[in-house]
Image 1 (cartoon, rainbow over the protein chains, first blue to last red):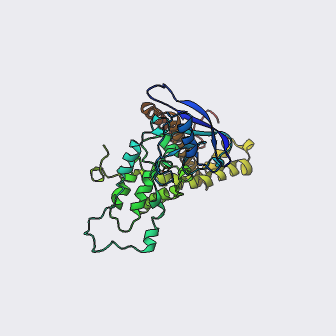
Image 2: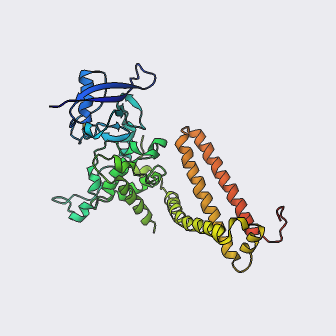
Image 3: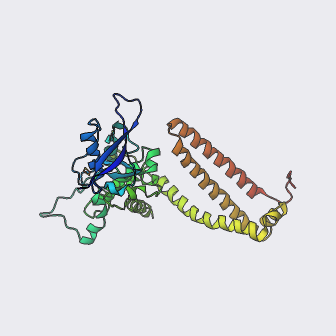
Length: 235
Length: 133
Ligand code: FES
């Protein structure tokens, strides 16, 4: 096992002690094939136990360890240290209040998620077995079913940075997943919500969200499809 | 508290229509502005532009066309420019109060400039009193 020395620069902030954030610098020994999350564990377990971060599954599916690594949002458990040259700079997600070190307050994020009615709406009595759907109908929204609510897209969006009222790409992706589901009946209500001032029209097609998504969702395309749907129902 | 969908007032079509307006006029502006530059620089030549250029442009058989052309160039360019400026202002100004102030100021500026331009384009006569004649 070949260990390599890597330099980490981590933005630290403890609201009980610090008046403003500061940079913690650490030299750790890791394998090139280790994940950035392993490097963070190395710091927490062997250098400074007070480093605070969220993570759970460590396999890119729970969405809890999204952070800003060398200026790009990513899941720390899904990127390898060898993907980065030189110092690896790690910061909390932008646009949310930092609670401690790499942990941000996700409450506003989930409030926006809830605002688009991210659940199945159908008042008809369920059939004896499942509600049927053609494979093509299922394909229509397949891409947006992959979202894990990590907030990497929303916090990479410059529009969201400057206007936290904006519902954000993640909530639009979640709405898209139901708007284009043939079995769902809440489409009109969701479209009305996204037609508000804080909705899809705030999107400036910057594509940061698509680049940031660790699940490879074509976020900007999904937002564009919702815009198109809103536009077409007027004519 | 987030309102549920049923409590929301209907959203109307202002947002979607202004979005569409910006797309359509953006495309038109591309054609108009490039044509304008080509015409003024290469067909007429900047050094030859004077009051008489405008007189011949805005009167005669093609007068109506050129006035319409200039109305579009004026309104589309100012609308896109001011709209862009409000977005830039939003990027740097975080306080809600100052945002309202800058937005209002920019749209008043837009209104004043567009109105001035439209007024000239609609009322222009070659023999009108002008300090530049
Ligand atoms: S820890 Fe679960 S996604 Fe990274």
